Structure formats: structure tokens, C-alpha cells
Image (cartoon, rainbow, N blue to C red; front, side):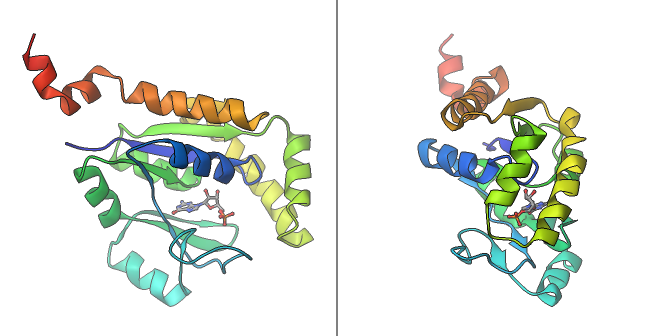
Length: 201
Ligand code: 5GP
């Protein structure tokens, strides 16, 4: 039995983290991959819960050892997904959600073409700009860099099978849940998860 693999990408400021946290809290058997990063923790972030925070030397050692299913440089910091953790969770039958950028998504798709891609869009570029300014956790230069990166990220929306416009959190969360739910109802997934059921017919 192998769990499904979901990739959720979005430009910074689209509300992805809030949405994904809600989804994980309300969805049984769906686990979130905790990425490794060289970015320093923001206030309130907890090592092991939000990310596995590490220095560049440790990240490079893991990368060279082949520990990452994918990795990318985003906003000047390195981010990577643990290959072994994903494999173990999926082998245990858990569906896994990756919250990663478009570069990482492309690498994952090469390895797992069945991965289900979901892109979260903000309602408009104006709202995105306001959200990035209003967050207050980063300085102006970082925000400008993120705006440029947001445009770059959005250019890759066409590589994702599903698109959610996050104008209203409740609606977007329900839509995200419906994608997860639909993916679990495909024939191949149902057949694999309930073989005894199909054998009765
Ligand atoms: P933040 O530092 O704001 O939490 O995340 C910055 C960007 O890095 C986001 O677009 C996020 O999706 C992406 N990111 C987080 N973890 C990973 C990862 O493991 N791999 C890749 N490729 N991107 C990641």
C-alpha cells in the first residue's frame, strides 16, 4: 500500500501555510513533510515542527549523501525534502503533503509522475503585495525579493493539476479538502486501499 503524494505550491503571501495547517488538522491520514532549511527560524517558529533548521554545512552534507528527494534555493536559502521520511510514510499508507516551491515540484514530478499538484493563488497581485507588506516579519528588501519571486512562482501555475484562488479562507480550505477527497476516490486508489471490497463483486 502506498500513500498518495500531494504537492502544494504558492507564491509567498498567498496564505498557503495557514491553509495547509487547517487542512492537516482536519484531515485524517494526511501528514505534512517537514522540510530541512538553512533559513534562520522566524519568531514563533519551532525546530522540528515548522522546519528542521540547520546550517549550510549540514544541509550540504545531507544533499551530497542523497538524502533529499528534491531541494532548491528559494529567496537565497536552501530547502530540501527528506527522501527517506516520505518513503516511510507512504509505505505505511499515509498520504503525504509537500509544501514546496515550483523548482522542487518539478523534481518531485520527475520521480513521481503521479504526484498531485495543487497551486494556491492570491485573489490579486494587489492583495498579495498587501499581505507581504502586512506580515511584518521581514524587512523591505526581503519583501521586494519575495514580490519578484512571487511573479516567478506564479508563472509555473500551469504545471499544477489543480488551482485554488484563496480569496476566502473557509472556501479555499474546503476546495483543498475536496481535491484530497477526490484523489482518494479514484479507482486505482480505492482498489489498492480496499482490495477485499472489490473481491466481493
Ligand atoms: P518560507 O521560508 O517562507 O517558509 O518558505 C519559502 C518558500 O520555500 C516557500 O515557497 C516554500 O514553499 C518553499 N519551501 C519550503 N520547504 C521547501 C522544500 O523542502 N523544498 C522546496 N523546493 N521548497 C520549499
